[in-house]
Image 1 (cartoon, chains in turn blue, yellow):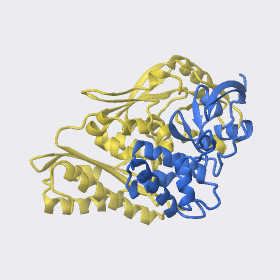
Image 2: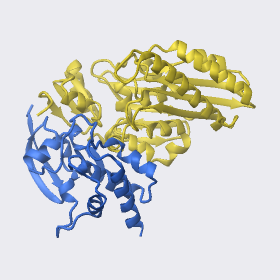
Image 3: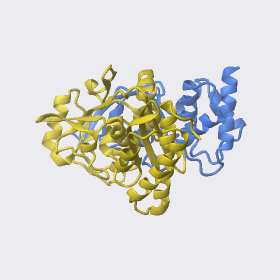
Image 4: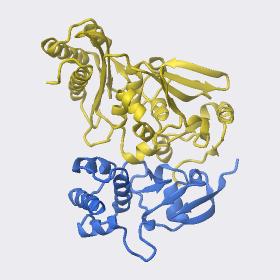
Length: 159
Length: 296
C-alpha cells in the first residue's frame, strides 16, 4: 500500500497538484508543503480552533483533516481573505479597528469562524456571536473586543 | 507528522469498504468526520494499521425523513441535521441535542453515526438514540444487523460492533402524538464535553403520563436510562402540583441510581447532584412541550 498519494486541491483560488504522505494533516500540508504559515496550530486535537480553515465553504479544523482527504476540495485560509489588490477583508479591518487581537495567534481561526457565522446568520445577537466563537480559544486579550468586531461587521454588512 | 503510519483507503462503494474492514479486522478503523478518531490518531492513543475513509461513499450520505421514521446515513454531519427543517419539526429532541454538540467547525465535519459509534460518555447522540428508542444498522461482510439502541451501547467508549463491522445507518421513530421532549446539558464552556446532561420524553394524554423516558448523560458509561423514574411517572397524573412532587422524587431516584467517578472536571458527588438537576429541567421542559403544565 502506497504511503503517499497524489492530490489535486485548490487553495485560495490556486490549483495545486502534490504528492503527500497519507498521514499528513491538512494543517501541516498548508504550512510545510505550501508554506502558508498563516494557519496556526495550537492543540492539534481539535480543541483550540487556531487551525480553522474553510473547506468547500464550511469551517473545519485542519488538524483533524488529512491532506489526502482534500483531493478535489476547495480550501480557503487566512491568506485567501485579502482581496487581490491587498485590501483587507472587512472582517480583518474591523478586528484591527476594534483591537480584537493581541498576539494574533488565534486570529486566523477566529476570522474564518466569524465570516462563516455572518454568512449563515447576517444579524446575530451577542449571545449567538459568543456561541459561534465558543470553539476558538484566545489566551491573551479576552473575547469582548472580538465580539465587538464581529457585531460591528454585522452592522456594516446590513448597512 | 503526528499519527503513526497506516494504510489509507478511500473506497467509493460500501462493499469495497466492508471488504477492506473485514480483511483488516481489529487493525482497521473507519474514518468518517474524524472529529473523535483524528485526535486519537494525533495523540497516538490509537494507531490502527488500516484507515478506511468512507467520505467518498455517496450512498452513505443519506438523510431521509419518512412517515415511519428518520434515516441518518453514516456520512450525515451534525450540521446537516440542523439545516434540515423536517428534522427540526419531526424530531425536535434530536435537533435540540445536536445544537449542543461541540462547536460549529466540529458540527460541520463530525457525523451522527460516528458519535454513536464512539460512545463517549458525555456525548449527546447515544442518549438521544436510546431515549427515542432508535435503531442502529450495522454492516459487515456477513451482512446487515439491526440493533435496538440499548443493545448497541456496551459501556464507556464501547459498542456491540463485531470485528470488521461498521455503523451504516441510524433510525429514529417519529414521536407519538402528545409527546414533549427536551435535552439539557451543563458544561463549563459552551460546546465543551458536558459534565452532566439529561434527555427526557413524556407522552401525555388528558393530563396523565402514558409513557416516560429519561436518560442521563455524562455518568461515565454512555447512556444511562433511569427505569425507576420511568416506571414511577408512567400512569401518573402530572398537574402542576403533582408534577413538582413527582419530579423532585425523580431527581432523588436519579441521584441514587447514578454512580459517576471523580475526575478533573467534577467530583463524583457534584456530578451526581447535577444529574438530578438536569433530570428535573429536562422533565419540566418535556412536560410543558407535551402540552402539560408550564415550566415553573
